[in-house]
Length: 476
Image (cartoon, rainbow, N blue to C red):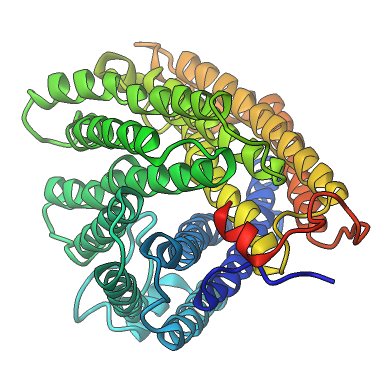
């Protein structure tokens, strides 16, 4: 029989958010596989789900499910860090259903209504906000996101204010508030194309290479504290240094998006220099994670969560750091921007930095939400296999996209005379696209393995959970 291990009852609202996040993650991967097939079989699912719609759904699902993951993680860890119940569990549940229904209706709108018609029906003529990548949401959806974000931040902020303040909760809160404030630029859509792209990057870049990194650092620090038993003071020092470098390089590193959109030429220097420094905080996260695991005071029974946390630091450094660096300098970016090299960086960066940290949090918290200190050994073994399957499959996809991008630059971008056309170049990349599809199928297999781990049961006498009590779990 499972023993209740949650320290605060209101933490249970996180379970809804985690389940929704995993469901939307699965849908995102399915649409991604469809896109991979459309690169090879141009009329696949046409006219029911054309490429532009599938791509829009794929990227929007990525953003939405990560937001669900961040919100669930905040609802779980903030009460524990603040040592008090969540300010309003009912508000958290109400916002969950509002966000889920609004997101589902938006996806249905993308799939069933032509985008131009959708813009007409949702008041885009009143305030033109649609039509930009990642920010395609209709005006009512954007307004709904703002309402949900404000309600969520009120709930979390009030919880922190009435309880204990820790570096983890404060850094997380700063990242979440930054996320909401940067999203407001999605409502600014000037007719001047240069200003339009500049404000667009204020959302997209300052999310993923700015405030999201604060969220990443806070979640990673929380999981490592709980699973290693290292002194909080040690982890706090690492966290402060990492976020300082992340903010400095991330904010000024926005300049690598300003190279060729009409802004002053000094951005080529600013963007190149500070973008070249952006791998530093991710490398520090890698050193941080391995250092904490080596200095651990105990062997936590949830070794799967430790694997996901260490994997976050390594893959985040490779994707956001190394693969970002290889094409961030302006003389290189001149040729690679918008090629499959960009896609390789984007896939590995999102997977390494944000997908894995959300899964780390779910891996740690879900057993506790289900009444255990850790999942049974058999379930953890299944979960660890899923990590390696997904990570290796992502590696296959990224290497294929990198090879495709290099060949694309060689055939289409470098020649000063007789450059191959875009579509002719795409025909030459089919070999790499097939490899990418194989990697995508493998990734889906890894995700299914991960989902299956939740249904793997173990012996009730499993020493992983034997003898644990609520007090023991709280001390862990």
